[in-house]
Image (cartoon, rainbow, N blue to C red):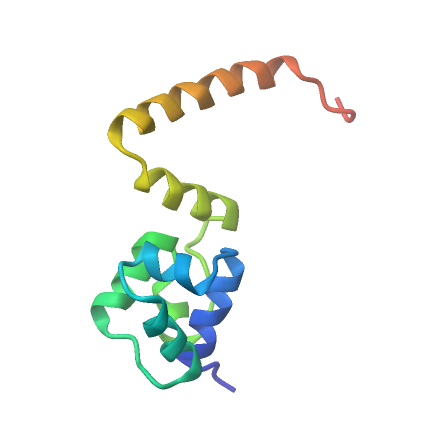
Amino acid sequence: MEIEMKDRIKALRKAVRLSQAKFAARIAISKSYIAEVETGNKIMNERLIRLIITEFNVDDNWIRTGKGSMFREGVNIYVAEAMGMFQRLAPPLQESTVKFIEEMLKLNEHIKTPSE
């Protein structure tokens, strides 16, 4: 049984842990439009589907048919969420964020996990 588009959109929104308002803001539409999509009263047009695929690293086949994995191969939910947040930062903040992550990776090299 194929999962309907409205249910896939809702499942994706819940997977990325966003409210309807925050999900809608990420793809530049209104909260009410997403609510209408999730109830089956509106349909997603091609432009919105492409935005969702790009913004959330969603697998094209999954969003259109419900078959396969929700996210593109090699993408996990945390990476998808972090990339979306990073892309919304102003360029100077993106640069600072990259530097911060580089410093965190240096610290990480000195931390031993219990299995090591």
